[in-house]
Image (cartoon, rainbow, N blue to C red):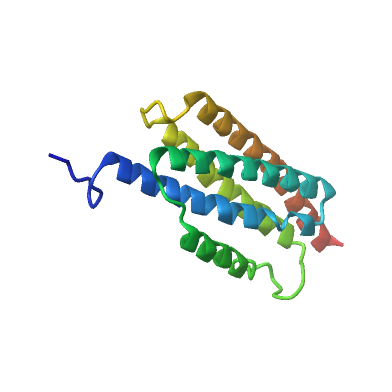
Length: 169
């Protein structure tokens, strides 16, 4: 007898749904990091470009894991997520049409939040006890996520400092 898990017929269905959620987030994250070239800080532009490259690699791994467990790709949901990310560009930075001193601060905070969600996903997948979940690779991805967070925090602090100093001038 198959035990039902609150609407899921098996643990694998539950895992497949979870992986699809994170595949959707990965695509939205790549779109989010495409804002990087618009940042004022050259170091932030480079860091976000580097992280965006890492996100492509991470999504590729996640797609492979999804295939391994029989999870389909959420193409429609990914499209909706990309549209949602673009709508999210209409953020409360103080101006709808122009960059303000807060634009970099808000963009970097949003990127940090996205990476935090991804890190939580790697941590959750590390709890899945199955040989198809390559623990060494998940540990590497988790460490990479922590590195991404630290790099974003550094640039966020610098952006906030610039924003507050610009208001003094």
